[in-house]
Image (tube, rainbow, N blue to C red; front, side, top):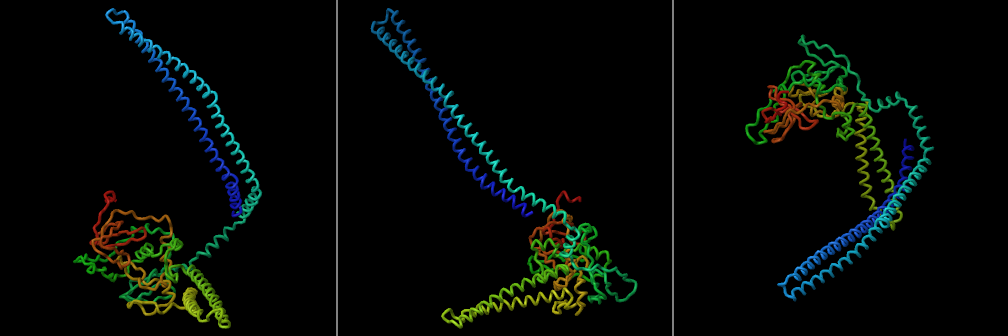
Length: 532
C-alpha cells in the first residue's frame, strides 16, 4: 500500500512540475493577451460611437440651418410685399435671408463630409477592425486548446511510466489480502487487551434464617458489614463484570438516596452549610439491589477509550485490569531504564573529560565538571527509586510480593486483610441511596479495575434527557457516594424530579451527575417535559 501510494505521489509530483506549473504560467499569459484584445475592441467600439455622435450632431445642425434659412426667406418675401415697410428694412431682411442660406449651405457641406467619413469608419470597423480582434481571440483559444492537449499527453506519458510498478503493487496487495489469518489477528488483539480477570464463581446461598455470623462467599459482589466490623473472607473474592449491559436500561430499578437530605443552612454563610449527614447504617439489602447498584454505579474512568484519549489515571495504573496494568508497568520500567542508561552515558563522558582535565590542566578546570556530575548522580538516584517503585508494583501484580502494608485504613476497618481479597473485592461503604460502593480513602491500587471500566464501554449508551434546570441556593459538598457537589448560584440540568424523598437528580456535564438535596436548589422544569 505504501508503494502504491508512493507511485501516485510520483504522478502528483510530475503533474505539479510538468503540467500544473506550466499551465498556470501559460494561463496568466493568455489572460493578459485576452485582456489586451478586449481593450482594443472597446477602443474600436468607442471610436465608431464617437463618429456616429459627430454625424448626428452635423445632421441636426444642417437641419436647423435649413429651417432658419427657410424662415428668413419667408420673412424677406413678406417684408418685400408690404408697402408700409421701408426700403431699409427690406434690405436688412434680404441680407438676413442670404446669410441664413449661406449657413445652410455650409452645414450641408459639413454634413456630407462627416457622413462620408462615418461610412468609411463604419466599413473599416465592421469589415476590418472587429474581425481582426475576433481572429486574435480565436487564435488565442486555439493555442489554449493545443496546450491542454499537450498537457493531457504529458500526463498519459507520466502515468504510463508507473503503470508496471502499480501493477506489481496491486499484485502484492492481492497476495497480502489472501494471506490474512483472521484467527491469528484476533488472537493478537486478545493478547494485547486481555484483562487478566478470572471468571466469578457461583453465588452461594446465604441463610438469613439462622442468627449466626455470616461470611462473604467467594462470588459475593462486595463486602458485607455488621455493626461497623468487616467479616473475614474465605477464598478469593471477585467482582462480577457485565461489560455489555447498558447502564440506563436499569434506571427504572434505581431509587434516589434513602437517607433524608440535609436541611438547608440557617444562615447565608458558606461555613454554615453542612456537608450532609453521614450515611445511616442500613440493614443488608437484597442482592438484586446491590447488583443494580454495581451495574449502574458511575466509575471515575469510564472505559479504555478514555485512556487512549489521554485520560488521567493513578501512577501505578491500578485503574487498569491486571494484564493491561502489567504491560503498562513493564513499559514504564523499560522507559526509566533507558533514561538511566542515557544519564549513565553522560556521567561516563563527563568522568572521562574530568580525567583529561586532571592530566592536562591547560584544557580546563576539573572542578568545573563536578556540579554537572552531582546533578546527574541525583537524577540517576531518583530514576532508580522510580524504577524500584514500579518494579515493586509489577511484582505485586505478578503475585511475587504481598500488598504494601503502608496503605491507609479507616478506624472501623479490619487491621489486616488478605492480599487477594483486598485486591479483588472493593471495600464498601454505604452511600446515600443505601447501596454499597468503594471506599473513597482506599489506596488506588486496591480498587477493582473491572468496576471502573466496563459499564460505559459502548458508544450506543442512552443518555437521560434533561427535563429542566435548577439553581443552587446553597453550596453542597456532596462527599457521599451518589451525590454531586455544587457551588452556590451554580446552574445544573435536572434529569429526574424529587420522588418525595428529598433528593433531586441533576447533571453538570455529560459524564458528571448525581443527587442533590431538593431544599438546596430552585427547580425550573420545561413545559414540554412536565407530562413525561
